[in-house]
Image 1 (spheres, helix red, strand yellow):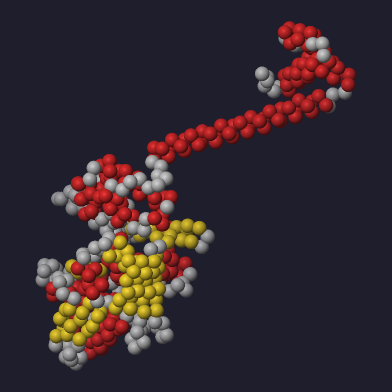
Image 2: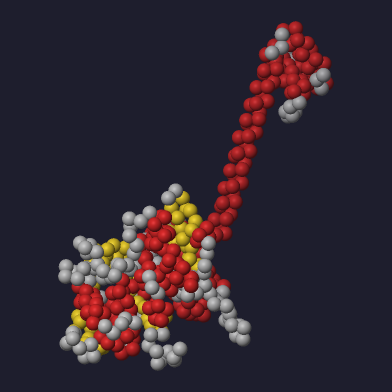
Length: 450
């Protein structure tokens, strides 16, 4: 393989908003009468609208955008939205054959992109503001092709200013173009771009199966779960074969999350560490905790280096509490947490720290245990009283008299003296009942009542 500077296809760039949602169909040709696609996540939605003349973009059109991004990097490193190129060099970059049909296909794709409208409702990441915003635009502002019959003549394209600003603001990631263009399936390519972005944060992800298939890959919403699995399988196998995904058995890959609901687990296959060079340790401690909550690695390093550890721990705890109790308050956890640490936000209203919560939960559990035990004791007492009463009521009169006599005879001297000293008949009856019940409890093997 040549040096990266000599082979422009080795290391490319990808705009990260384009990785999150598909912006093209998975087929090679547009569907008749279908001019709009909608993709959604918890932040909002993306609506892709095609023109009347050219319709929605297709799978090869996605490759063209990837190629145009790379041409921009090579020509001016994202300093100018207008880029001069020849269709011949773009065709070579895409790996398409040098044939008339493919030049026509490329020309059609460029015109199609000029007519495509992307409307992001709360899903366009503004890297300068560090937040999601609404944005609506054509990804290409214009394309100029002086002579469609001569592929060597310089043509030009101009990016829309919203898209180009995102590139200028550094909302780009590396993309291995050799790997990307070698993939045979459009599903493989879209999954590769999406996961390549996500794997930067962590190597192990679990998604809702329909969410991944419909919203992030662009598969037909008419597919049932079994169809999704069937359509995904060749792409998964292709990504496993190139060493991108960790191979898994179906039982490990898919887990049932409820009636009709399935999750899919996708793990990046990490290369074995080189024997001669020990792997550098990854982020640990507070830096790792920040990254796990969506803060970028570079920002996490900076925050840990410049902010007091206690402030970071406190803001992590505040943010975790908000995510659990008021999830709508925090749309982007990573951005919110970084800002909270920098500005040392006050605790949110109603905040309860882990220690206070643990103490309260312990006290609540103890109170509940006491209440449950008291109810059980009351139930046991009622049951014992019922058994004593049933025993007494089952005796004939002569045996009742004998039981009363036995209760008096066996009573403690002080209890018997109190009975004999009582002048009022109601008092004597009450004392006798107590002595009698004590004898019955003894005969039934019940505990003594104080």
